[in-house]
Length: 574
Image (cartoon, rainbow, N blue to C red; front, side, top):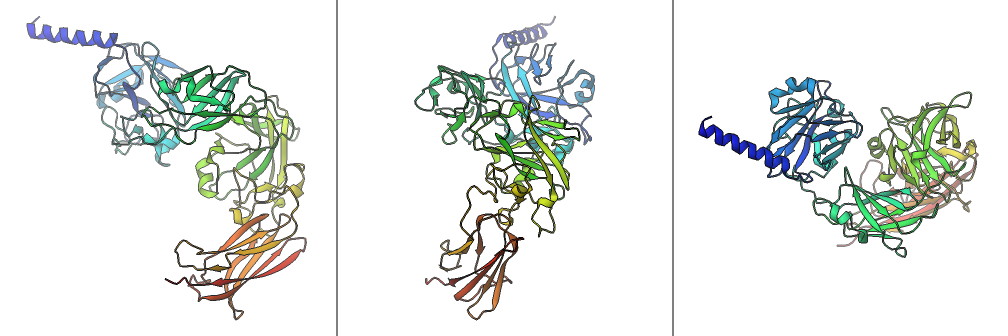
């Protein structure tokens, strides 16, 4: 062998030996692109792939490295040196030829399947250490059209590999992806967001699992002194950051949790893998669940006739003092014989449902947020499918894992308020938690002032105690709509004694001429307000002076009441 070739061969062998012997570290090699759904084909081969990128300063031999989707694991069986700042495409062995035109390729027997809408993909070192893991879903595309297939998911900033959704989007390359080369969306995307404590669940009576919204720095996450249980009970005896995503921490307690007692977990001094220190959103509930009895959790609100291209939803409310685990609960329909069909589990993993909480279940949380006021987005849980909810009448059942019925509702569209012409997009709300679920008098349409639905918070028609009678009040008595941020609007507050009231509000000038029809047949909640901005029906500014607010409320039982209030429209002196 020629001396030059011999020298090159020796150097290459040294690199291989050094890289195989050197310990790998978290994020040395990352998953920075994947194609879960290759059809319809845009320009790439009709085959799934995962792309790895070496972002370290060390060359690694990938022999015996593993790719897993938590169900199946494939092992790289050959030597392949992945140099710093270089890429390799991992795909099924049968598709190696199709991807070889794009650069370096490793074909795997038993390549772990990539689910189209949601999976966890893990890269493991030969020592079985988690080097990188991602848990993606369709929302990561940030493009509804591209999420339907043919386009790869690309990481934007490889220097922030532990950031999830916010650091990924659909490829913008004309082929639909960039296997073997720099990503088309590559750029600076700094992680400046502090981590937050999302929720907890209990593995057993002495173990709490704390879940965060992103991966944590393992050293700070594994310090037991960074956690406190209800202040008095002190810190756990140990804390362990859990792979593969490192966004969960296992806390072992020096005491036994009492069943259905609600504890508070507080955290401090924790940072994410970008160094951002947790500040707010550092406290959540914790507790040991038990099995709910009948009516402990009730069906509280239901949308069964959504607007065109919309989605049904069901809201549940925990009216008991018990903590439930939604992994043990199911929504279903009931057939004629009383058997449960179309059964859907509320959560595939432990998920605690505390007393006094509302949770909403739907197939599309984004649509729900875009069309209703969702005050607690973290209380919306997406299901892959919902039980059947026909537009005219149907049923919905809440059951436990033994098929015991916790609550059930057979609804009818005739329960909507009688003056509603178009029921589309209007939710049915439960009036009282304590009255029977199946009582038609305990259900009515969500108020128009609430946006025809109140997912994740108290119903607009909720009634706990009987109120005195209808009242109308106006604040402020003098307002100046000059857009200076101070008393620019007149607010007309109402309060009624029962659900089912409708309001008409007309504004008159001092001469008795109507200048603004503010509300026409508006369905009222039990309380709320209307806003007048000082404009007439043509959106023109009105003159300063005294105006009369005439409000009429009525219901289908024939009760009618009129209110007359005055307000002064003024102009602030400069």
